[in-house]
Every structure is written in C-alpha cells, then in structure tokens.
Amino acid sequence: MGKSSKDKRDAYYRLAKEQGWRARSAFKLLQLDEEFNLFENVTRVVDLCAAPGSWSQVLSRVLIKGETFGRCAWQDREAKLRQQMLNVFAPDSSSSTQTGAVVDAPKIVEKKDNEPRRDVKIVAIDLQPISPLPGIITLRADITHPATVPLLLKALDNEFDPSAMGSQQATNRVDLVISDGAPDVTGLHDLDIYVQSQLLFAALNLALCVLKPGGKFVAKIFRGRNVDLLYAQLKIFFEKVYVAKPRSSRASSVEAFIVCINFQPPEGFQASLEEPLGVGNRLPEMLEERQAVLPITAAPGLMQDPASGAWDSVPHKVHTADEDDIYDVEVEDLSVEHTEDIRWVAPFVACGDLSAFDSDASYKLPDDHVSLDPVQPPTAPPYKRAIELRRANGGAYKKTGTK
Ligand SMILES: C[S@@+](CC[C@H](N)C(=O)[O-])C[C@H]1O[C@@H](n2cnc3c(N)ncnc32)[C@H](O)[C@@H]1O
Image (cartoon, rainbow, N blue to C red; front, top):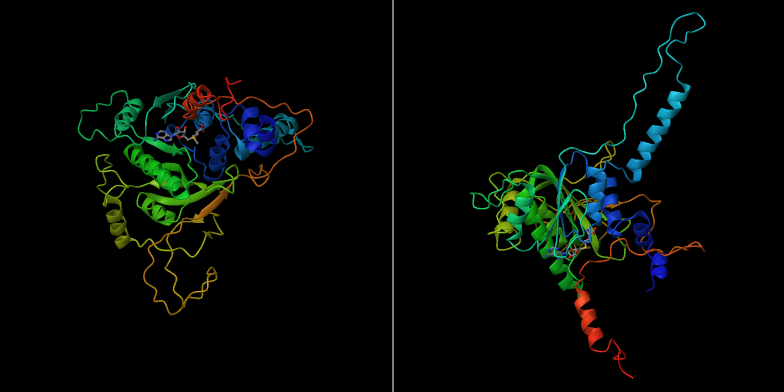
C-alpha cells in the first residue's frame, strides 16, 4: 500500500505524522487518558514495550513539558478565553456605582498553563532500540526475561543494590506502568492470543515489583476466549479493572486495553520473578482465596452509577434462571442446574471523543495533500534481516540481478 493510500485509509497514521508522533499508538494512550485521567498526580512511570516511542513521547510532553491534549487542552483553552474576557470586561477597582459606593471587582485568578511536573522519572523498555527522547531513560531488554527486573530497578533508583535482600522490589516505586506489548502477529489467532497473554503476564509481574499502592496499570490485551479469567485475576490486585477500546484502535481488531486502577496487593503479597504469576498454581490459588472473601462472579452487564457517572466494577450477584434480569438476552436452558459462576465481567468502556476519526473508515484527502514520511522509521525491525536475505536471494520473484 502506498503512503498516500495509507494516509486515506488510516486517519490516525496520517495524523501521527502531521503531529510529530512516532506511531499512531500515541492516540490510543491519549484517548485512554481522556477517559481515565491516567496522568493525574503521576510523576514516575514505566513504559514497557515502548519502541518506537510514541507512548513515551506522550509521557514526555504531558509530564515533562506540561502540555495538554484532547478534551483537557480544549478545557484549558476555554478557561483562558473566559479569563481574557473577564479581564477585558472587569470594572477597575476604583469604579463606583451611581450612589457613590465602591463595588468590588470580581476576583480574577490567572489560570496558569499546565506546568511541567517536578521529579519526573520515565523508564522505557523494548526489545528494539528506542531513539533517544528528552528526559526518558531507555533500556533495550526483554520484558519476559528475569534479568530485566534488576535493570529496571537500577534505572528507577541509582542506589538500588541487586545483591540486597528483597532485590526484586523497587525501593522507589512508580505511579503508573503502561505496556503496549505486541508479539509479531502470525495470523494464527489462538497462538497470537497466547503469546500476547504471556507478554501481559510479564508486564504484570514487572508492574507488581515496581508499582506503589494506589498505582495504575494499563496494558494491551487481545480479547480471546478466556479473557474473563484474566480480568478476575487482575481484580486480586486492583480495586477497579476496566477493559477499554479507544476509537483509534480498529473495531475490527481483537485489541483492547485493560485499565487497572488503585493497586492494592493482598496482605503479605511479595512479587517475585522466581515464582511469577501466570506460571504454576500461585494465581489460581490466590483467586480462590480472594473469592472466599469476596466472590468474583458474573456481572449482568455494564452498570453505570447515574449520580457519579462512574462505571461500576463491583462484582454482581450470579444470575440464575429464575431471576428477572433485564440484561439477560440469552435464552437459558432451565433444565440445566446453575452452579456458581466464577466469571467476573469487567466493564467495557469505549473511549475517545465521538467526533474523533473512525479508525476503520477511509477519508477523502484534500487535492493538495502531501504525504509525509513517518516521524521515526523503525530502527531495527525484525523483518529487516529477512528483507536483506530475500534481496540477496534475488528478490520475491527471483528477478533481482537476473537477466
Ligand atoms: C505496538 S509496539 C509498541 C508501540 C509503542 N507503544 C509506541 O507507542 O511507539 C509493540 C512493541 O512490543 C515490543 N515487544 C514485543 N515483545 C517484547 C518483549 N518480550 N520485551 C520487550 N518488548 C517487546 C516490540 O518490540 C514492539 O516494539
């Protein structure tokens, strides 16, 4: 597909180039932030599977430079405009009424721009090299490898001593861990979903070592058959778990993001990569333990509190066939005995402004459209070697170099 044709078919690809983002993924993070306020009170972040670096760019521009985007930027502009109008029309303090009484001018508080935050620390990791970004520590490492933990802990804290006791725990913890990890997709659905789930567990294990209580974890998932079990497992560690689909993620793709809020590890829990979650029985056992205290059961549907507008992620009662449940659209077989259903369905939240581009639609480009080059071509894509080998062997149709 030519660049121009891709510009037409993928509005976010075109916008990313126009706005200087290294990848269209930047819009996914911005749209997730718009819904979940991910960066509120955040100064320390780990960005996993970060190459070519568009999520890190977002972090850098929001946290280090103090920029705002999307609705937040629009609200800032509106507030500034309101302020300017008030400044123009405000009576000066010496003005008096017809009766001679001095009136107080409305108090005008100058709204400051979003300011760069203090003590920001951002560490980005990927298998691929990441071209430098101002203020960001980049590491080239495999997030599934145990040796990556000390590397990350050292990057987060210079004083970190890998030989000390509890050496897999960060001394100086972070507020947010984000992971956009994706394997090279094979097209074999079940295999891709399995490999993706392994990346997710690796990201979660790292997050458990470095997150501070109250922290947030956001990660890409492929919605497969047993994804509900994953949501229930995440509920062991986080107060709220949502599954979110930004508008910039194609509706036709199984991709979505889990957004986990308020990290609250079970009492006495120690993250350990010697006994990682997702391997062995540790997680299923923890799930059972937790269910004994607070059943994690099937939710009848997405519930939103009409007062606060907050999505309800509190587990609901299990449905039974005799319940008059308005959410139940399936015809239930009443002869089947209902046993306790251990699924917990995470609220699904579509995010991104409705006026935002639809990532599955094609848009007509203006006649004078100039197709830009990507901001940051991949530095060492895994397919580079394959292309070189193919060229050396005469190209795809064995034409190169032949007469
Ligand atoms: C969709 S891209 C990430 C895009 C990135 N968030 C951005 O905004 O530019 C997925 C990345 O996952 C990385 N990845 C896949 N497996 C990995 C692993 N085991 N360890 C580290 N990175 C990995 C790939 O190298 C790739 O760069």
